[in-house]
Amino acid sequence: MQKISVNGGFSCPNRDGTISLGGCTYCNNRTFHPDYCLSAHGITQQIEEGIAFFSRKYKSMRYLAYFQSYTNTYGETSRLIAKYEEALSHPLVDGLILGTRPDCMADDLLDYLSQLSQRKYVMVEYGVESTDDDTLRLINRGHLFEEARQTIRRTDATGVHTCAHLILGLPLESKDTMLEHARRMAELPLDTIKLHQLQIIKGTVMERQYREHPEWFHLFTADEYIELVIDFLELLPPSIVVERFVSQSPKDLLVAPDWGLKNYEFTAKLEKRLEERNTRQGRLIMK
Image (tube, rainbow, N blue to C red):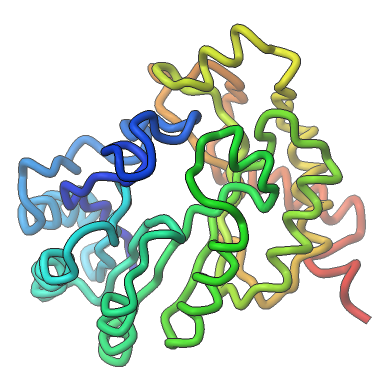
């Protein structure tokens, strides 16, 4: 089963003026989608191009349509559903993954997703990014953690699979703050979680902040980040699947840090260090 990124041509309330015009300080949406993923191509064409790209490796592959760029539950419900259903009409597509914000999940849309989940795989990925409200204000996120907590609980109650994204290393956050993220995530009914190290991306507000206020930032080395992730995992229930530990932004957009590691290489180093520390996910919360 392979995810195919689909650009549905959506906007974001943190960019179009509904919440803000500036967006999140770390965000450059060009880091989120492959070359074939262009909204001008249309959803069906993007899926066909994605299948052509991936099917060279595995002829019997099935697919999930991954609406990733911007806020994919933002807009009129009927317009959203039409895009989802177009993706699902492809005979090789078996489900949806929707990347979105916790302040953009209308009740009628969640009802639709709940019904859809009875016949197709459905996952909603919420950008939580931090559980610290001071940080959320600093990065101009446009919502606080309580809204994320409530929306995740509301989504899980409908039977829809639920994921949270967190960025580790946001400006002015201490190690204790980041480990508190793990404790707060542990209290939520999440199926999966995605962790990302902070990356400074060209063309963002955070790039300017990094130049003007370097004291706000501690950009981890790969080894430092591995130790932090293991500390994080020890506080996270084994029932929550960790889908990702690191993010890889395109080289031409990345300011720092550049570790020179592929995702699988990082994971291998992490697993080796887990063995060396004789620890595992959930160790500090399991009796």
